Structure formats: C-alpha cells, structure tokens
Amino acid sequence: KPFYYYKDEKIFVFGSELKSIIEYLKKDPSFRKESNKEIVYDYLIYSFADHTENTFIKNIKHLPQSHYLKIQNREFTLKKYFSIEINKEMGKYDEAMKNALTALKMKIENNDQFGIAISNDNIGNILFSQKKFSEAKIYILESIKLTKEFGNKENLRNGYYTLTEIADATG
Image (cartoon, rainbow, N blue to C red; front, side, top):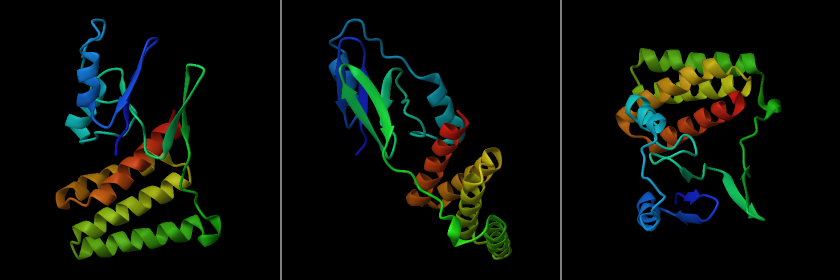
C-alpha cells in the first residue's frame, strides 16, 4: 500500500490515499490545495506517477519504495532500508553488455516487443551499475515506453525504480 503524508510545523497527517489527507486538511484554513506542476508535467509527458516522493498535490509526499520515515524529536528523516546490490562476481560488465545487446538484437529480429522491453531494461540496469546514468536512463525510458503497450506492471515498476535510483545518484 502507498504511504502518503503531509507535515508542517503544527501537524503530521498520513494515509494510504491522497483523498483522506486532503479531506482532513480541508479543516485547516491555512492549507491550500495546489497542483504540483512538475509532477503533473512528468505524468502527462512521460506517464510517471510515483517516481519521486512528490505527489500531484504540493506539500503532500509519497514514501518511496524501500524507504521508511523516522520521526524523532519533531525531526523527520527519510531512510532507505533496501537497495539492490550488484554482484561483481557474476561476470564482467563487457560480457554482460555483449549478452544483453545480443539478446536485444535477437528480439528485434523476431519483433518480440516484450523481449525488447526486457532487454532494454537489462541494458539500462547494466549501465546503471557502471554509473553511466544518462545512457541507462535512455534504455530504461525506452523499456517503460514499450512495456506500457502490453501492460507488464512489474517491468514498469522496475523501470520507475531504476529511474528513481538514477535521480538519487545524480542529485
């Protein structure tokens, strides 16, 4: 379930739906429901909805995947508790990239859209592990675009997760 929250100097409100938080905040005359234009833009142009902690409503946040929120002495700290580690002993970068590109070529020749998306996702992850973030982003975005056509939610989630990791790594 998603975890949405709003905090200011007076209150902390959370819920699994934006609607419940907005309903609660309607009682507060200082709260103004404003669209978060950056997130709306990302959604309309790239179909990204939960790739950052920001939501469609300004000042209401979404807890990212694999994170928890620690509240201590009125201090809020967002902490990551899980990250995929690359096993360096499983093979070399060049060999992995060569295999992924070979798989991509075979999938293109067979017009296998699902295979092309998965191959792009794999190439993006290999590039990400090598800190080649701009190149990784290109392959991940292509994977997401293709994946939307056949609705594989797991691959979409993985792509969005990698994009979030790229954003975190590049600041």
